[in-house]
Image 1 (cartoon, one colour):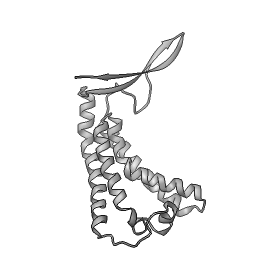
Image 2 (tube, one colour):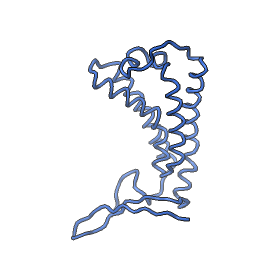
Image 3 (spheres, helix red, strand yellow):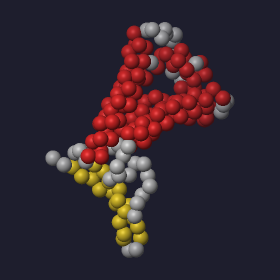
Length: 173
């Protein structure tokens, strides 16, 4: 029995699929999130859109590494973008506009996009994105060669004539 999910362990992964997942989670999340804030007057939709944008910025590019089950590289890129985002909170109004800033309830001061904190934040976000995009090749290659020290797998098992998922973890020394 085969499970058709892009995140199921034990399958051969491709760099193009990893890159596609990462770019889709980044671009679609940011685009739809900003559009939700800009186009709707409903507070719930605006908040959801703002958090979707943050997801796209912070986690989006790492999903390609997560697809290849390379969690350390995914978390490193995510961490860099998270720190960059925190440094740029006071620049939310300048980057995304007044409405977006009001929705999140951040940015109560005016800053220049060339402010040192802003430049460091922008650099960390960009560096984290580039790191995740470049590291996809290594992530997929390691996954396909079985070079993992730790893996989590979901496999089907038959119990009382019913198919049930079984979660297994392995650690190699």
